[in-house]
Image (tube, rainbow, N blue to C red):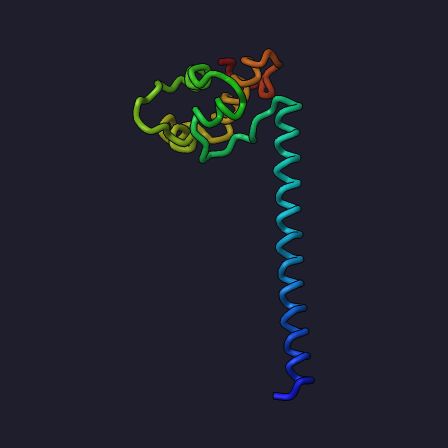
Length: 125
């Protein structure tokens, strides 16, 4: 192999390595800035994460800084000493829609924080 060909291959490999490193740095910085933004928004507004079907009552309570018992009471669900259920399973077991269960939980969180309920059409906790 000629020296000219070796230099071309070396430069191509160097270019590929630099491109890969640049892409990795870009995605790392973008992800870090999203995480920082989320943490700052949560700290300054007192809002927790958006409630999703996979979440458990203890997880939601911790995220929104409320007592788990107040959330269990709001949805009229007994505290189980076994592994906590995701709220999708609780909704299924109670015959409720996810929207209704989430609305009840959001109203209970607002009540605990001393705010007006975001879903006044749903029965209060």
